[in-house]
Length: 147
Ligand SMILES: Nc1ncnc2c1ncn2[C@@H]1O[C@H](COP(=O)(O)OP(=O)(O)OP(=O)(O)O)[C@@H](O)[C@H]1O
Ligand SMILES: [Mg+2]
Image (tube, rainbow, N blue to C red):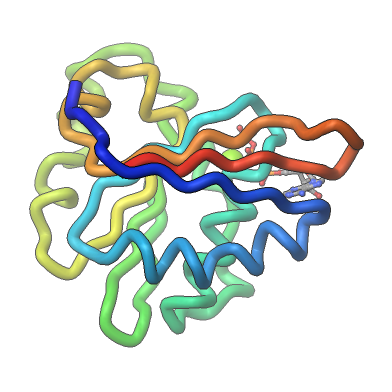
């Protein structure tokens, strides 16, 4: 696995707060990058991608969970945001089949992958990871960004 050398911790207390963190993350993690989003169901991974999409100048209304379609793409002002959810994949060869490596090689692409940590091959190539965990109160979420 790649060694991450930098880390940053953030906290949010609402869904809107998580969307708001998209700005900072879009400045921290500049394309081209493969970013793995880690954390349990409902922690806010898709919500955070919505925030990043907005910060990059894409149409935020569009952002939905790609759980069934696997890949969504949003065109920002300069960056293409590629959003994947690998929850439903079980085998390494399926990851190859969806063309993840080609996407990650595109110079203008910020690739954000939910459930990428299920696959060693994805973690090996990840440029960054964002862990989302539950905070002390219901809507609080703690983010650990490593890159
Ligand atoms: N601080 C918060 N940040 C983000 N979402 C929050 C927060 N507090 C509560 N929520 C709620 O948690 C849910 C997060 O859903 P979201 O789809 O973003 O999670 P996810 O991590 O992508 O889940 P999955 O693993 O199923 O894809 C939403 O229903 C949202 O309203
Ligand atoms: Mg999701």
